Length: 510
Image (cartoon, rainbow, N blue to C red; front, top):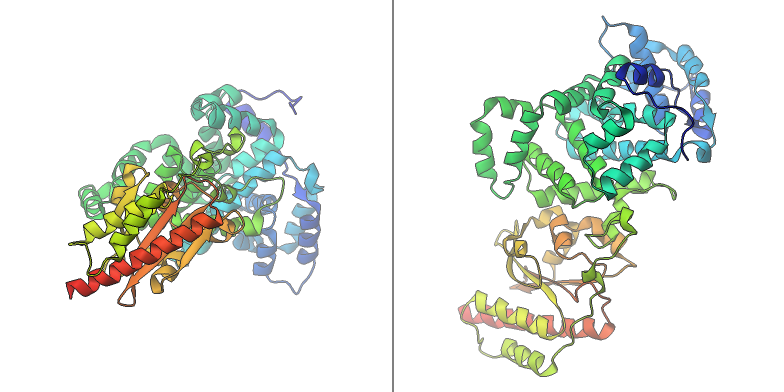
């Protein structure tokens, strides 16, 4: 709905309008917090945890505590310290001044951006709090409040969110140009000015200053981060640039990374913008991209279980879709997902299986065996096939053969320890059939790099063993189409033939 209020066009006018704006709070949260503040048995930590259910209340308390403390006092970095500074009585008076509304009367745009902020806090806690345990409060509150200036903006003008989505995400206009057109000022400059006026945590202010005035460091780090397949070379490049290495390892960067991941995932997990933040997070944590993707997908799923509601969009929902589908394009299914499955050529399939079952083994090396296995899987109707082999320590799964996939599949390397599904499959031979009925359970437990190669809700994953140890993982589908029971049975028989071929090959080598 268009707003009847004219939009300011200067930074001064924006600050004057947004600084006075009170953010609405759900009436049930408002009542619960008022009761807790009136209960002398409640500790500050309990009250702070209760306030987390309403980010608007947390912002108002932190902002007021820092405003009253004056410029000569260090700002409160957490809600608990802000409560201590204000005192319970003054906090109660402040909370009572906040407008309490039924949930459906609070602008949808405001609730959506606050959901993104809670998703960012979930990512920050999962990715960084374990490594920086002493700074967990700074990480949590900094990541949650990083987008707080935009909360105030969307409270006053909720229609801006939909306009931004359509122009930036759908029409692919430059975000800076859209912000200038809509606001008259750069959005990042407005956010920084509000963060400084409200004396938000220092890490929030540092993040905005970095995005505005020190993007050169960010670009240099992104250039190194893209070389994720060569960690030694990455480390050498960082060692050669001491200022960059010192900047990159600053704990304050954790909240910028978490918000970059959450905000970019709002559109798509595999967009160039999202992948840049994933690569940068991998460089910060010194982890392979596949491990980073596995973790952020799991944290997103956990965030969705805790925070998502029917009328809001959570990026974790997209983990259940074909990888290239987009919410703002009618949830379009990719052509690969609707392709007609290949028709098995019975004679060819039987011939390939006979070769696999030959005694002694008809294969002279592992390359020949896996090539024959891939051909048999194709002949049984699988149009996309990936064969992964485990190294002796089970610390890596490497692509050995592939067909029907992107060339990137040839160099795929996965750490199975970062995936519960792959760990279980390598412990003992087993088969997993993914369908729309169970993909919600398993999707977040699969590496992102694997899901990117198979954008499908219909997938077969099977592990094979040699000498009682898992040595091979087969991933296959019929171009994303529904798998019939007959197709699954033929796939199972083919996998049994490959298992026999592995056993014969192992005996031949001995």
